[in-house]
Each structure stands twice: as C-alpha cells, then as structure tokens.
Length: 454
Ligand code: LAG
Ligand code: CA
Image 1 (cartoon, rainbow, N blue to C red):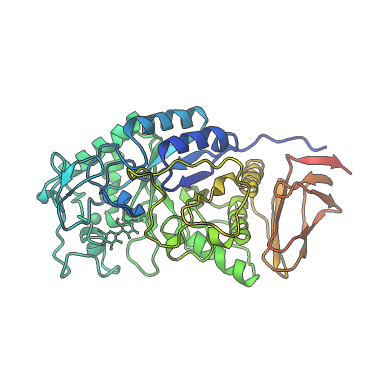
Image 2 (cartoon, helix red, strand yellow):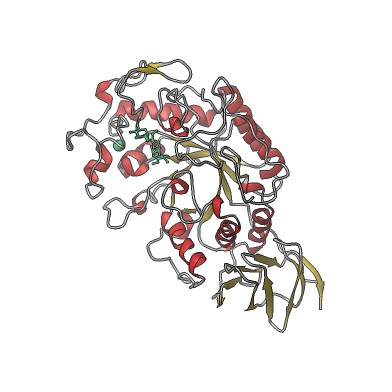
C-alpha cells in the first residue's frame, strides 16, 4: 500500500450566488469546511436598490451592510462561523458605480438617493460624466477611456481617481475587513483603471485577498494582466476553452509547460466553469446540462492551472428573476444537505447546490492529493479523455451518450483504488489504468485512496 502523502493546502472556492448570510454560515459548517473548500464568495453585502431582480445587488445605494440577503449582524456572524469552519469569506465589492436608476428612490434599508446623489456619501462631483457618448453610456469597448469613465448600463460611474472617492471606498472595505472578511472580488474592475484599483486596494492591509473581475475581450485594449500586478484575476479564457471539447468529444491538451497562451500566469488566475453572468450569457455548459456540467467541473478541479471557484446558484427561466423571497422581500434561506448531484428538472428558484454534489466533493479530495504535481499529456479515445497528475491521481471523462473506455498510462503504484466519483474500484496494473465509463461519466483515482496493492 502506497504511503499517504500530505494533502495540499485547500485552495478551491465557491460562489454562493444570492444565498442569505445565515444559510452561508450553515453551509460553511456542514458542507464547505468538512469538504475542504477554502473560501466562499458572497453576493454584495451593502445596501442596494429596492427591486426584485437579483441584479439589484449590483446597484449600491449606501455602504450600510443591510441587504435582502441579511443584516450586518448576520453578515458578521457568518464570517465568524465560516472562519471557525476553516472557510475564508470573500465579499463582492461593487465600487465602480452606484445606482442606474434615473428616478430618485430609497434603498433596501430606507436610505434615500438620486442617480448622482447619495446623502452623506457621494455628491454629483464624485461621478464621472464622461461626455464621450450621447447618453454617457459605454458604447465602444475598444476605447479605454469610454470603458473606464463612461457608464456601464447607466450605472452612475464613480470618479475613482478622486482621493475623496477612494477614501470613501477604502473606509467601506475596511469596515468589511473589521468583520473578518479575507478579501474582495472587485466587481467591474475593467471599468476602473488598474491604477485606481491598485491605489484603493493598496490602502488595505497587505494580506487582503483581491480578485479583480476583468472580462477578457478579444482585441480590447484593457486586459486582465494589468490587474494581475496587484492581486488575482478571473481568467475568462479558461471557461471558454472548456466547453467546445465537451460538445465535440475532441480533446486536446492545453499548453503543459510554462504559461498558457491567452491566460494570465497560473499563480494569479481564478478559473471557473461559469458564474452568475456567464450562466446568463456566454457559458455553453451550465447547471442545465447536468452530467456534462459535472464533467466540466471535474476537469477544472483536476487541472494544474489556476485556483478554481465552483459556482452554486439557483435555477431560473427568466434571467432577471431573483432568488425566492418571503413576503417582505428577504431572500429565503436554503440548505444543501442531502443534495448529491444535478437533477433533470429544476423548478425556478431551486438551489443547484453544486458545492454539495458527490462528484465535486470527490474532486476536491482528488485535488488535495494531486497537490502541485504537474498535469501530464492526456489520452483522447473516442468520446473519452483523461490525464494524470504525475504520480498522484488520474481523471477520466466520457462526453458521449454511449459507454466508453479509455486507457491511461500512469506512474501510480499498481493496486486497487477507490474511484472518488462513483465509489467503484479501479485497478492500476502494468503501468496503466483502464477506465470503463458510463455515458457522460467521470472517474478519478488518487494516491490517497488505495484499497489494495497487487
Ligand atoms: C458586473 N461585473 O462587472 C456584475 O458581475 C454584473 O452582474 C452586473 O450586471 C454588472 N457588472 C454591474 O455591476 C448586472 C446585470 C445587469 C444590471 C446590472 C445593474 O447583469 O442586467 O443592469 O447588474 O443592476 C440592470 C438592467 C439594465 C439597466 C441597469 C441600470 O439590466 O438594463 O440599465 O440595471 O438600472
Ligand atoms: Ca468607471
């Protein structure tokens, strides 16, 4: 029996989209901590406009920590409980803009506002009014100036070059840090200059984790690399590369030596199969694809590139529909206990609970044992494909509708291993492992789960 190596430090995150703070705290204790998730990305924690659509969260009214996902006290309690469960909290920081409402109104917590007036926080002079387009909206993504100083879908664009604006944003982020959050997703980072974002996050403690959302756009002048200088960035290219082979059955290995083309260096890359925007947009494989989505996640979690974040949201047929609420508009809590995989038919509002799926949890275990072992050249046999993480584990997938077999050479010691996906026994012999795979099946073995030597 091979000796069990030290597990790698957990690195995988999960985006719990529009899940209330009390439920995230529960998930940290029951599912995320025990299964080795390292961090959770929450939806924005600050006061937003009072509307039913999920995207109300992306229209800040104030920096009071009162939202339909929970109160300040609930947020603080969540951070403490997740921390105790070994799970860091990363908050979604919406700092590029305020609301996009032309009419005056009051926020979720009752704070009055106008499009360019936020009493006690910002006044008209704190906003860019770019004057470059007819309505001040961004129209041309090839124009750096428009993207960074005009308005993203009418959202009042903060002048993040201003010292007073920066100071107000820093005070908000410091407040969240005082409650124990580990860091921030910087929403719409592309719409602020890298210099502005760097100045803001540079005012925070050194160990604050920063993940900038900079959607890579072909030929656009603003690139994620600019923001990788002072933190991590979401690498959108990764998800774009994942889906086509799942649909065609034709796999090819990524660049296995050095940096991947059109990807930021691995150390600063956050990768994902989809997120709340791409599942409503460019993503070809989402929760709706059930087993194929499991395969996409398994390949990401098995990979040696970047830090994965699993996405866990809710089913919807209307892209604007918010998560289910009570009569007062508070988002209902939900538990993922007992959810073991995707289902065929979701009702609108059902939580997908991807982070609780057996296959995802199994791949977290695989990943912990794979550590920093390099990914080796893969084998593509018909609709099946698989690869080894050198000496640590082997993963295989079948994207076809028929059973398939793939034989992968491996340096894992001969013996029998527990498949972390199905629980079946898989045999390594003569320097190879033969995986018999169900239609749309996944299998993975690792050096930490031998059941017998041969
Ligand atoms: C993001 N990252 O850069 C978020 O991940 C993304 O979800 C946000 O868009 C966007 N940037 C602003 O933070 C979401 C929705 C939009 C929504 C926007 C503001 O995808 O649909 O726009 O949040 O709430 C909505 C309407 C627009 C309208 C705008 C202003 O769809 O038609 O112009 O609100 O009222
Ligand atoms: Ca801006």
